[in-house]
Image 1 (cartoon, rainbow, N blue to C red):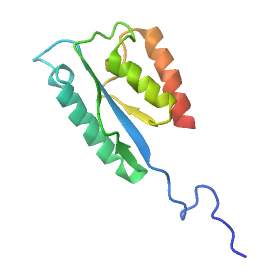
Image 2 (image 1 turned 45 degrees about the horizontal axis):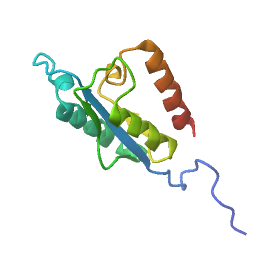
Image 3 (image 1 turned 45 degrees about the vertical axis):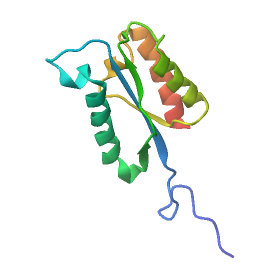
Length: 122
């Protein structure tokens, strides 16, 4: 009688994890090209996701980008769409170039971090 492989055994294939890229650029700042361009932010995140190929990370089909929005609150269209996609189990990992792209308010960042930790543990 053949037994199924034990959880996390070498023969078990880990699931692919869909990674959302979130970018937010509120103003153009030539002194910091990583933060001033949504494209530069996206490219940096794509490179990081590619470096995690051995973990079976795969970038979502599109980037969640809020161009021209401040990080002062969570009322941003792409961020709200991202949160909905997380709730519907379409996204397992969120990748940002820097944490302040998510929020500039500690209370909002703490809320988002709690949500992201939940999806990571599932």
